Structures are given as C-alpha cells and as structure tokens.
Amino acid sequence: MSPGAGDAGVLGLVKAKTGTPMLDLKVLQELLMFVSPSTTQGSPLEESSDTMRHLVNNWERLPLGHARHAQAPRNLGQRHAALVGTALVGAAASSRKPRPKGAMGYAGITCMKAAPSWEGLATEARGTDAGQEVLQHWADRAEGIVPHTDAKVRYFGTERQKPRVKIFRDQAAWCPYCQKVWLLLEEKKVDYEIEKVPMRSYGDKPKEFLQLVPRGLLPAMELDGKVMTESLDIMFTIERAFPNPDKPMFPMSGPLRERASRLLQLERELFGAWCQYLFRPDMPFLGGSEDDFTRTLEEVDRELGSNSESPFFLPYPHPTIVDMQYVSHVERAVASVMYYKGYNIRKKFPNIDRWLSAYEELPHYMASKSDYYTHCMDIPPQYGPCFSNDSETAVQARVGMIQLFNLSQ
Ligand SMILES: N[C@@H](CCC(=O)N[C@@H](CS)C(=O)NCC(=O)O)C(=O)O
Image 1 (cartoon, rainbow, N blue to C red):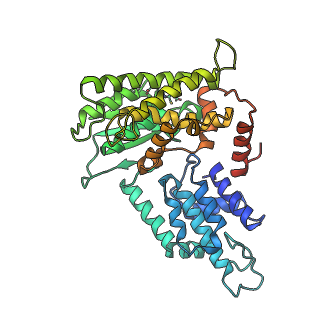
Image 2 (tube, rainbow, N blue to C red):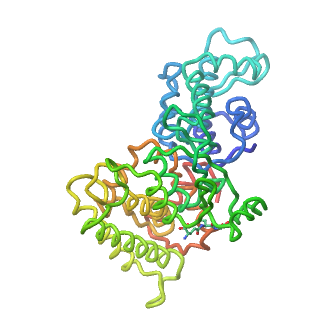
Image 3 (spheres, helix red, strand yellow):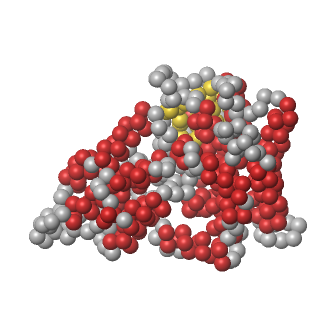
C-alpha cells in the first residue's frame, strides 16, 4: 500500500497548519496501515479536501470525534476521514498536559521519544466516536450495505443471496462508462457483485476476464450467467430485467421517449465537442474549437432548463439513464476544461450547475465521483495529451491544485 496524491494533500494541509516538518509520507503510510488496513489500493483523489482543510484549520476547536463529519458528503473520503480522525486524536493526545518530558508532540501525531505506540494510538482512535464510526463503516462496507468504490458486493434489501448481476469495472474508478452502469444499479437498488479489472494503462487484464470478454472492454456485465458489454446496452438490459413502473429509468413511449433518445444523441455531440476542444490543437476547421463546445453546452443547458419539474433532464424526481449518460463525462469535462483551458462550465451554465448540485446530494453519486485533480491527471493516459492554454483562470486552476495538493510541478 502506498499513499496516494490525496494523502499527500491531506498531509500537506496538516503540515502547513502545524508547521511540522516531521509528518512525512512514511509516517502517513504507517498511519494508513493501522487506520485503514483494508485499503490496499490507491483510490482516486477525493474532492473532500475542503472538508479536510476545514478540519485541519479548525482542529484546535474541534471536539474529539468531529472528524466523522469528514465522511460526508462522500464515502470515498473514508480513508481521509480516518486519517484526519487519527490526526485529531493525535493532536488531542499531544496537547494533553503535562506532556512527558522529552516527548515532542505536534498537532496530528505524536511519534517521537516517549510517544505512545502505534498500537496505543490505534486503541485510542478506536475508542473515539470517529474511530467507532470508521470501524462501523468498514463493517457496513464489507457487508455491502453502503456505496463505496472498494465494495465487492452491494445489497439493498435483507436478502443475502448471490446477486444475479456481476459488474466488471476498472480498478481505479476512472472509467466513465463503468460509472454510468454503477449509478444505474445504485439508483434502481439492484443487488450486484463487483469485480475490478485493470485498464490497459495499468497493465494486463487477467486471462479469466479475457475469456469472458475477448476485446477486454469495460464495463462488462454478467446477468444470470450471460456476459455483455457496452454501457448503454447494459443499462437498458438492467432496466428491462428489473423494471419498476413507479420509477422508470427511461420513458416507455411517446414524445418523452423521443426526447430522451434525442438527449442521448446530444450527449454524444457534447462528448465529441469536448474531445475536439481538449485533445486537438486550436486550429480553424481542424478542431480545438471553444465555440463548438460552448454551443453544445448551451443546448444542454437549455434542455435542462426546459424541465421545470426537477433538476434532471426528464420530468421525473429522480435521475434517469439520460442523466447517467451525461453525468460521468460532464464531471470529467468540468474538471479538465477548467484545468487545461480555464473554462468554468458550472459558472457559465446555471442549469448544468443546478443539475450537478442535485446529483451531488445523492450519496451513491458522491461515492462514485472522483475529484478534479484525479480527473485532470487520469484523462491523458486514457484519451491522449490535452491541449492547454495559459489563460489567467487556467493558470490559477493549475497553481491552485498544485498548492492544494502540495505537489511540485
Ligand atoms: N462504447 C463503450 C466504451 C467503453 C470504453 O471505451 N471502455 C474503455 C474504458 S473507459 C475500455 O474498456 N478501455 C480498455 C482499457 O483501457 O483497458 C461503452 O459504452 O461501454
């Protein structure tokens, strides 16, 4: 297990606040080993850094156990919550008087001469509200009753039989097509198992997977033993296999169905415009056109604005397949065009912003959502290099992220 960039970010914040040079990645690694033994792979960086910053900046005023609030709004932040929880416990321990002679306590962790052992700290951490909550969360995660990127199975009711659905998705939650399927299963509350498979950029796929899916494409689904690929096909198959007339995921017929189908096409146009803008040099007729991207976003924003009944694309109180088709790529577009181009989608398009905010209220979406920095860094290995500009906002976004996550260029 190695600390990820997100841990370095939290580390940087704790470090900046406490002014200690001693909290290094090695310490963090040890911390993670006892705080989160089940975390064995790097998860994408979380967007909980604001919460973290708040906690770290206010740690002196926080009662022990406050770190549990770091779990909200997304479960993907558990590791960070655990880390800050432990840091707070360490802070309280180190500020307790009298401090043993010769011990060097510092906010975050006490680990010099006469400092408590890791086991002692772990015991202390487990005894706090935050520690209890983290342990409970791990147990819930192992049972499959909370959404989490590391979950191996998800159950929504009381049955604990082998689910009919098995989803194969990428290890690091980078794949936007896997995210759509994941969101649908969560929204529909269909029990499922998860098997993680590396993407090409991580290494070879296991031969057992290639026997099932010779092209190696993700996501894949096994439903009642039958394997299929293509995210949209998978989503429609799930909707047909587990229908819920009270909560349709796609309109059955009529003009609304036609509109929904048109919206699916518009999403592909938006995807194309994003690719042209980001992955092509800015040359007349050849690509890189900001105008095309803006025009398509305007249309998407208008479509969202035309639904007065909910913040989603269709007049249902819940997101549908249409929303799922959009959200994973829009999430990546928001992050990447800000970082590489200084283009602020959420500020320019109020209906898109409102829609994303509504999505961000949903815990299962937050569990699947990655953070902006990870998106900016994981897009090039998948799609190729991004063309950046040096607009003031883009430079600020880059510098901001580098400072925020304490990374050097
Ligand atoms: N049209 C497919 C596209 C899926 C796709 O492009 N998947 C990528 C990951 S995002 C993939 O499997 N790439 C192979 C790899 O990287 O191993 C779908 O909607 O499912």
